[in-house]
Length: 127
Image (cartoon, rainbow, N blue to C red; front, side, top):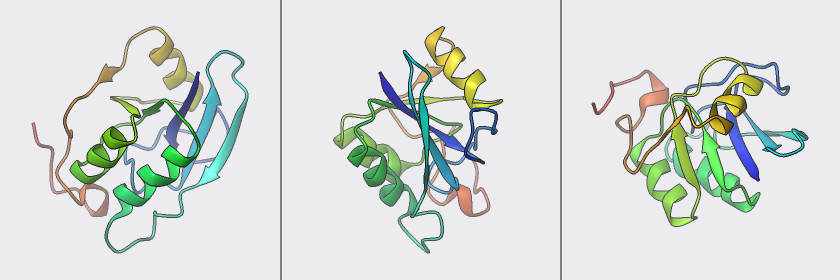
């Protein structure tokens, strides 16, 4: 299955970025083969709408799920409309996050986990 992980870098040894819309890179991985490709997040420097822009970019790549630390309301809405499943709580390296996902250790979410603009200085969690 093809998934995306919010990342601080462009390898499987890069760390997971907890911010979905403001992460610099997405690693797209085939969970069966572990083949991957890094994609720059073009929405990262957007003044507004980074979550929506990142979600639209990810959806165009045909991923079925995103692994990240948190997902805000706009990104959640856009990913949901695109049929992309969201798993939060991912930490460690990209490789470790994918293994946690494969082992069922990440939480699937049906609502945002942070308020809007979280990646721009963190206004706090919804919970």
